[in-house]
Length: 456
Image (tube, rainbow, N blue to C red):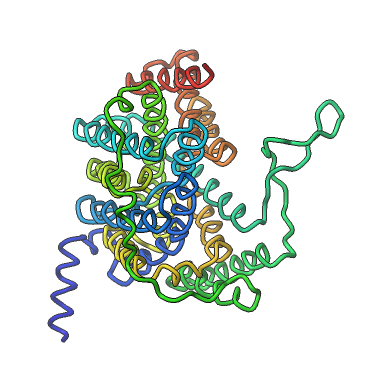
């Protein structure tokens, strides 16, 4: 038995280079479970969202889990990074509400756009275009992306728990006006069960962190879930379901060439490409910065396989019947638990596979129980701000705009846009144009053109 265990550990060491990355099997597995539990909600939310576009709920559920497994396995084996992938939030809403309901296109049309996006991403990655973009981002902006993602994650956790809410009344010209856009946040009713459970979870997890308990985030999630039972928030699981067979209702459903070569397809495709590209790049760079995975030049070693993971995941996801697959910002929770290699991602991939057969069991974990982990991960992601040169305003102002715009615009991609465009403009007009690379200049022009086109 001991010989067998030794052989298994030896294989894992060779495959994932655990000692080289300062980690071990136990730490990686705990990190993988933690990441999965903070993002398991996608197994429920994604099918629910896409079903509003007319797609089969159980079919999308299966496609969501399987595409997450495929993409995350590639990330684990080929890139050896602790990043987990699944169909992305925001992009699935654009799929259902903007393309299908808003533009009155079929869900097959939207799936075709996702397939083309995935194929384009494979080409862009193969020709190192996406890697060049990652390398072009200045080091201070890379650190700022990590901090911005931290605030973004914390805001998601606070919002999911109902601790903060949108839609507060605001004053304008001395008059009280309803804020129709819901752009100002305000404190929710923290005396109700949901927010109260999250606050309890933050305190419990915080105490575990102070005591240096290994697996504090995971223990906090499980403990908060249990406390939620008498509070009426955690529901008992339904009967264990069998492997969904309805994937045939959504897999390989694409439109013909007459719709592929249309202006509407170009508009939809460009939006998918833009948001996914910079969400993924932002997540990879931000989480890697926090985990000290960037090299001396501020670049992510072995970035190409990591970028291939979401391209391959998106392509296969479209074939199976789900929206764009992207690297999840919740991967930061696993990194916070010490995850440093692909074994973390492999563990999460295995749990997504298991979830196909035990969906209701994972569905019992309420968002109020995972929210404390997201809130505290927001704190962990803040440390790279110490590496930003705040005395140099040509660096500090773009970094600040990157940080603040992510939670306020509720978009990693928009935060990167504000940071990169401001970096280019401030440095050019302050006589430091040499700091601006050609790639940064081209990207900034494209960003501006995108916003102009969106207004047309």
